Length: 133
Image 1: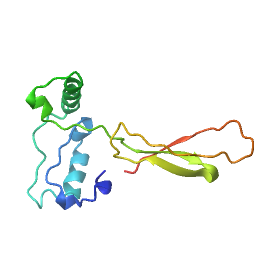
Image 2: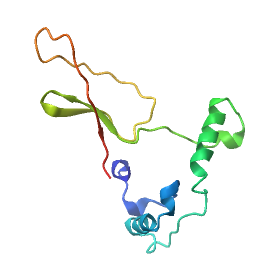
Image 3: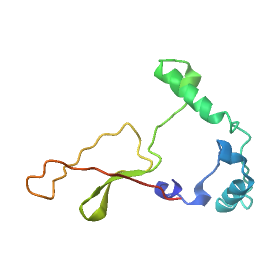
Image 4: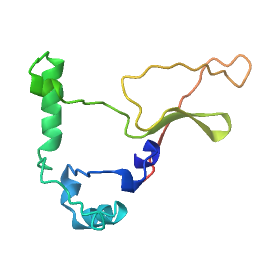
C-alpha cells in the first residue's frame, strides 16, 4: 500500500508490525532494509503486542459500533479499506477495475455495462482480484 500513498520510504516515521508474520526474522530484515531503519536510527516499537493488536482493534471497533462513548475508545480512528483491487472481466478479457486497493469501505458507485450480442438475455460476471506484492 505504500506505492499508492505517494510517500517515499524515508518519509515513514514509524513501522508497526502486527500478526504472526511480524515474528519472522527475514520479514523484519527486509522491512529494516526497505525503510533504511538502521541508517535512520529507527526500531520497531515494542507496542502493540503483535499477537494481540488485531484483537484489540476488533474490540475497539466493536465498542464503537455498540455506542461506547469512552474518550479513550473515541480517540482511535479506525478505517475499513479494501486490501486488494477488485474488478470485473469485460469483453476481450480486459479487466475493468472498480474498487482500488485502499479504498475506504463501505463504498458506493455504479457503472453501466452493455451486452455484446443482440438479444442477449444472460450475462456472466467474473470478479477479478489483483494483488501486487
